[in-house]
Image (cartoon, rainbow, N blue to C red; front, side, top):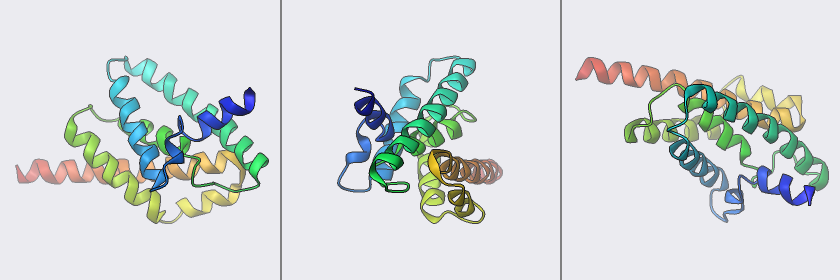
Length: 153
C-alpha cells in the first residue's frame, strides 16, 4: 500500500505517466493545483508547498531506490511543487498562470547553470531542488517581463 501511495505522489497523481512530455503534464497538474487552492490564504498555500516538497523528496527518493532510475521522467512531483512555489509570488490571473508555465518549462528543460549542478547532490532532494532552481529563475524572468510590460503599457 505504501508503494502505491509513494508512486502516486512521485508521478504527480499519475500525470507523469503521460506518454508525451510527462514534465509538461506534471506542470499542468501544478497549474490545476494552483487554481484549486487559489482561495487558500497565503499561509496555507505555503504549508501546502512545504508538504508537497517534503512528500516529493520522500517519493522521488523511494522511486529512485526501487527502480534504480535517477530522476525518471515519470517522476513529476518536482514540477508540481516547483510551479506551486513559483505561483506563491503572483496572483492567479490567466496571464500569470500562462507566463509562469511557459517560463518554468523553458528553465526546467534548459537547466541553466548552476541548476544542473543541483542534480549532482543525488537522491530525492536533488530531484526536487533542480526544479526549485528552475522556479527561481522563472520568478526572476517573470518579474522582469512584468516590469517591461508595465513600462510598455
